[in-house]
Image (cartoon, rainbow, N blue to C red; front, side, top):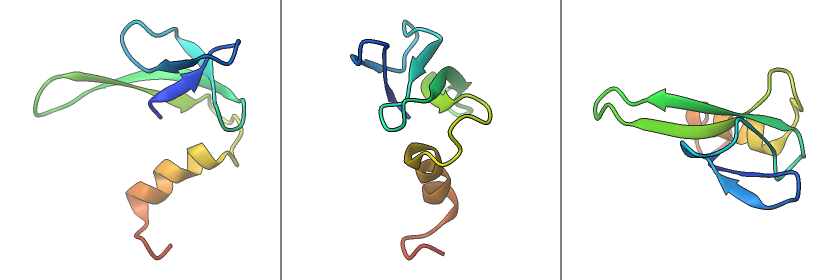
Length: 75
């Protein structure tokens, strides 16, 4: 996810200047700032991921899996 929340509820975008940890706006679980270097353009992209084994049933966690593996009819 690209937008997380700080402790005071203020939204924060994942980028190079973001803190290492934040909170999920949906479930309040701990998030960790991750980064990945794109192979073609060699640019670095930043994003938030739930901490390992944290809030496994959060809608934000499962949505990215559904979008990448499923199709629009849910199969």
